[in-house]
Image 1 (spheres, rainbow, N blue to C red):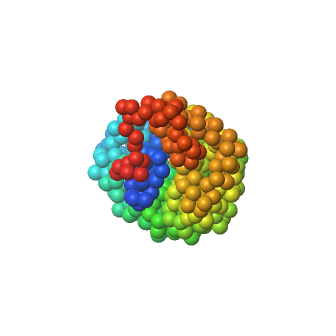
Image 2: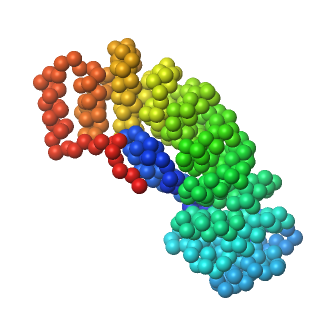
Length: 427
């Protein structure tokens, strides 16, 4: 059988978009959500690594025999009644679509291959054919919205969801990736995935058979509208995600924190449901002891929580012990994360002021070493951090502004335009 592509090519086109995120989500925190999604693209615009996969049918081609077909031969093979020819043609098409540069997505669509590949998804006697067809459709769905639409209108969603119950793990996993690309394109296709009852199947696959792709697909779903996120919550997503913050693999913790951060970016009743599922203790635990890549996602979750919470919810957040790990992370080498933490601290201090509890909160922050760290950040090489730290000190910890503080403020203001993050435009 022909060999599979190199491992680094297997993860190349996983799609994460969520273009329809509501204005509230778009305007959350110190960095736009759209920029945050761009960062997620860098991490997930890939496919997972499958090192081996064999055709377990009597018609298996001889190992090591390479098959190279032109487009005309691919079209003929795909439309053949011979499953071996169908397999060879579909695999060749998939390899074409897996090219790193300029994959011929449009060419394959215009050749009319999608409906036939969708039919192959139903070929339960030939799992390798199902696998290659699902992979080819995954690649096509990683393209533009129009190209994703071609996959959806070709009827792929329902057979892909049926493959989530396949006994063949490789076939099942490829179907998850394909659905993730479809759900990641926008609200219309996300609704189609949801309405075809994909979420319960995905949640079943998260623990533990196929956690990573299933988590990312669920994560794509909860980046949608509040209504779409609520459907995911109703389907039981919060029965699964908080527990995964305690998973023994940091990569799974990270994906769970990312998905939960998108739930936390919703309205206060979504935040209340997070509290009902006791998400704060494992969240604080990963902030304290998790790997930095997990801590970063957890910081985003805290930030989204804090900016959308009611006063009572914010009090619960503070009482959970979240301030200690946040203060400790102020020494992190990541500028964006430090800015977000400063914004969270400022948000909590403002809420405490409204509740006439600012003095006790300031004492707590001082006991945690927070004042020293924030004061030190005034001289940070990044002026944005310096200004944010200075604002907190001036507003919440300084009784009278002395001459040195005034001078520092003037230095930071010189030739510097402070960005109002809440007004940062996003597409």
